[in-house]
Image 1 (cartoon, rainbow, N blue to C red):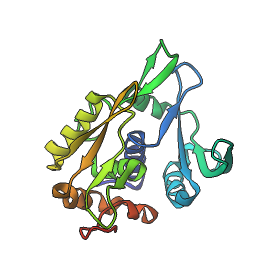
Image 2 (image 1 turned 45 degrees about the vertical axis):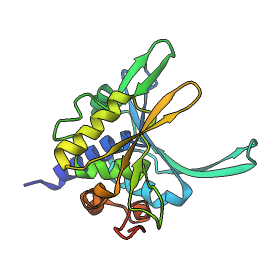
Image 3 (image 1 turned 180 degrees about the horizontal axis):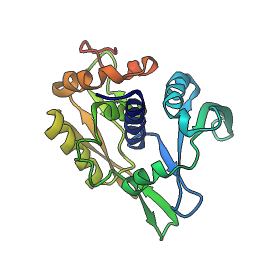
Image 4 (image 1 turned 135 degrees about the vertical axis):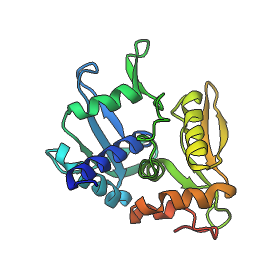
Length: 222
């Protein structure tokens, strides 16, 4: 039976793992010796960011901050909320799983962990955070199909995600290829045939303000 402390730890683990597949990221200022977690959301998703903060607040010493950035190219101002955790040894394992150093670029690159097949990693709750971060309906009012932006990952990483969804949850997905001038990237598509199974899998863990991203079975959203 889970204690309150162990349940809180499980929530943190699912949030961190799932969101590192999405918008979450780890930062290091010590050449990979120590790490902190960073979350960013648009102002309209403020409730989602504060939900994340509530779960990770034991690792933080400052609340989420609001900021605005003006882009002179588009003449638009973007508003967002962010928070950072403290540097913590508990984040080192996630860094080892997700990040490798690219000496040619002098940067740390994130990819899907090679051991993502382990049962403790891609749980339904972690998948929900991954989808809430980077998922979307394909055609609102026209289809129940969904998609997840995985363009930043390698082909091998995206294939690992597809394999876990199929083998563990019997969710069939497709691979959409995006070709740019100098690169090729890959996006996971959840077709109509799999939309109900995927929706039922993540429904218990959805934050209310993010339900609009998920199909309801009637070509709309939850």
